[in-house]
Length: 263
Image 1 (cartoon, rainbow, N blue to C red):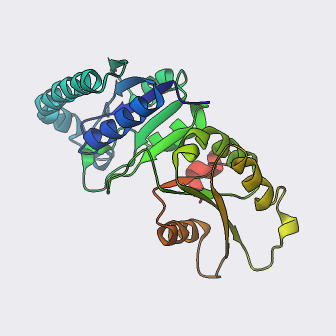
Image 2 (spheres, rainbow, N blue to C red; image 1 turned 180 degrees about the vertical axis):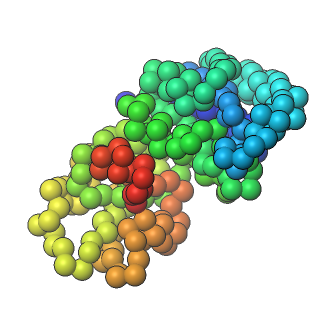
């Protein structure tokens, strides 16, 4: 099993170049076809959604966006040629969410980016990443806006809670787990929970991963009263020096996740 079709979302934000380089390296190592889908906000960055003048913002930045798009397309095509990777450049018009989804559903993996609070151009649509994860039906790898990352992570952290979503995420990430030097399966428990509360124990899922030739360890964190599950996972990832976090997403109802969020 390997990724054969990868879609990377590109925009006019500062994170597009490192995100493309990441996806290109992954495509080369996987022998995958790489599709760059260029899509930007159709009505201006998030900070202008509720303000008068968003149309003026778009008009003022139209030429800048055109220049960035042309430069990014040139970079994309040159990168494919230099890396000897097959690929396509697709520039979409209109709303980014539906446009990216159309192409994402035909990929083995989607590479997208985080919104950068210091870069308005990194915002393409409200709940863009969440909708991509919930609606594409494909695994999504979110590339952080800060830091430098390689597709081959020496340390990978798998967040395990015994759920269907976590199971799906582990299966989808196996090509990346096989490349890692070590994978650590972590569980976060509330003080009152026990091993019996988990549908599938971490030992069982670790054994399944190991059968794919992955070096696996296990770790457990008892959740402190003042810490959220998300914060606990980030703390564990830092302790493990993990370059990749594999976890399921959105196990609640769509409206609940979009309004209230989750780990």
